[in-house]
Length: 220
Image (cartoon, rainbow, N blue to C red; front, side, top):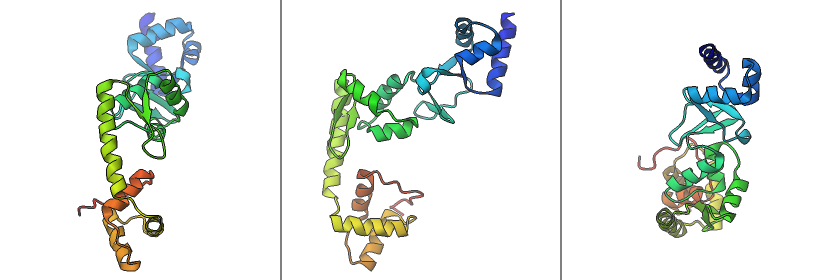
């Protein structure tokens, strides 16, 4: 009997990779406690979205290099809950992560979780630019991240654009989105007699989180 229900469970996941405990219990005609026990035997992962109500099998989840798998609007993580996943991602990040960066990784907003984790002392944060960067609480990782951030923003300040230069760069980028940073710099020198380096343009895009699709390598 138990072998049959395990086969039925696997067949349900073959039809649909994501289920709630309640719907599985209804389809299998078992209690939720029993279904959870069956899932444990097969190997399962709970979602970090939808308040952890969604389940998939470990054999189904296709985790990326950051341990995240997203199927439609549901997210799963190798690292556990949303809070556990956020803490892991920040701990492993070379210079911490902003709320916007984490949202892109997770495919889900997490500002309230970050603020709460900071308030209860689980995360650290600093504001070297326009937004908070969340850092690991571990002293060694925290210092390493602060050192990298300090160097990064010092470099960006060195290569910062004036307001006028920024306008010229953005206008040319909108009109020519496929150009590399080096090509944009050349175009500005040719058309507007504006002398700005490719490194300055790259730093400006990075600082303001402007995405550049299909960007050629500026070394070529």
